[in-house]
Length: 59
View 1: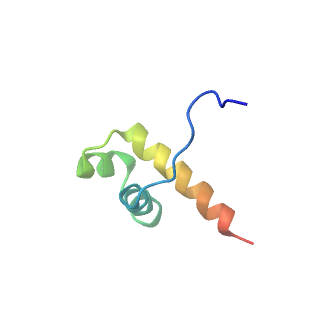
View 2: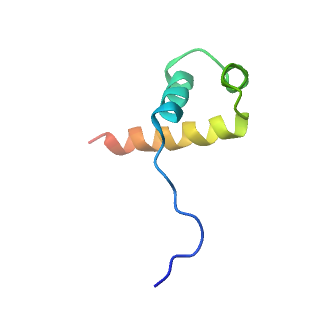
């Protein structure tokens, strides 16, 4: 059966680094967005994906 829609790709090393900087640091989405020149919505999406990955790693 053919899949419909887009498939979620894993985070790249750069995306993971940026998302981790938000989760593990003191910067806001807005500050990280300005620092890396990426839209806030993109940072939010990466952070959600990284959170989900980290939660999946817990026993």
